[in-house]
Image (cartoon, rainbow over all chains, first blue to last red; front, side, top):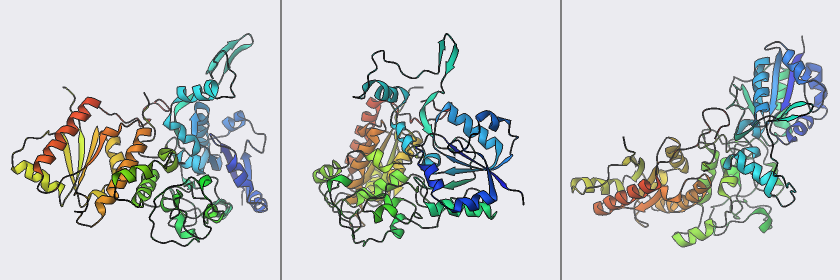
Length: 319
Length: 143
């Protein structure tokens, strides 16, 4: 049997997805037995021009991680889509926008000002910010355009499968790769994960009725190891997040932040999480409710930690 | 054509919807800007409904329920009372002014109050002007 031609690419991401791909350990050898890796910038030296020269649909499967934040990333996403028979969105950034997607609360100008001018450690007397092109004696130099709005991969190109996680757990990655090797991929559009309704179903903690008088950020409290974190006033996204990860964070006494995406049937993960959190506030007095809500410093960033570009509003309106 | 505020009104079927009915049958004039959606209880209004309204072109969202203590489902409106302030706080981060969302209590006998809440809300939204959600549509990446 001919070997599968596999491409792996990264866009706006942190590199954690590559580590997750390597985390399959010795199973990598099984993958190499079945697949030839034709493009993987982190590990093999194949240039963009080599990919450009590949015929259309000559790559069998592309695992694409990272959000789409620049014109270069958009270009590569479109090119890899054309060259690949199957496009798999790998990890929360590609799937829903991820952490880079929180940039959608601002725009390019605000982000450049913060990153290149305002930060305390920045020394930039001339106020230089990235430009798309500049003339120098040797010729014209160019940089990709930085977009105002981050998009997910499915908002940019047609995507066949989604592998959830930030980064995807080893068992989730292997579930997809094993299906790929055995040529048993599920129907197009599937989320490839262990089918668990919510993180709470994976979570071993005891759960009682939830009534909260005060919310804490994780550093403000030493939580009980056995009891539901939400009951202890820690904003845990488990109730609004699809399971399948094995509740790893909960087992390490940290709250779920929502990386496996919305539970089935929910389109807007952040609104769903907000609804659950607000409902457990233990008060019927508007003033007390307001003061309890004050504990939540950054609702948008907390509720839409990984899913802002994929949410109903997609981005903030900035003047 | 001059712009008119478009407000989506979610009205609880037990109290506020009947209050709106009373305003109508009593012929109390009220602004025609609120498009009413009847819901079983104000707590049926998920935060996503409000967000969806803005995404779909609403300039304001009005949520009306039974007075605290009067909920047909005992504590539904208390849940609404907790959700709306948190939702407003979050929507502010999205550039949606807090005044574009209003939660109030209107009983079945308060036709007058219904009309005054609707009129006040309409005027408030008129002051704020049209809301256009920034969906990041059109040319990729453009604001």
